[in-house]
Image 1 (cartoon, rainbow, N blue to C red):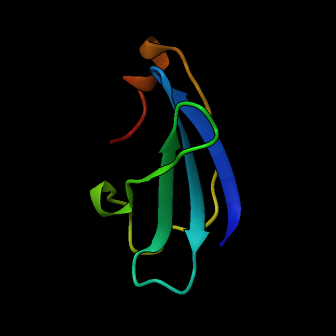
Image 2 (image 1 turned 90 degrees about the vertical axis):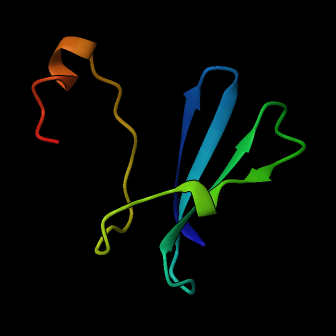
Length: 68
């Protein structure tokens, strides 16, 4: 695993990472306490060529103007 980035969604922290040995190439775990983690990789969908990234929070008004 490499290239992790962390974001918070509600009460959970989500850790995304490049999982280069897996077919999906990306993985994610969630935690509320940084002691226990739950894998959510099967629930994710990313473009096939997605690699390292980061999370950038933007205002709702701006997010509606971005391409889908």
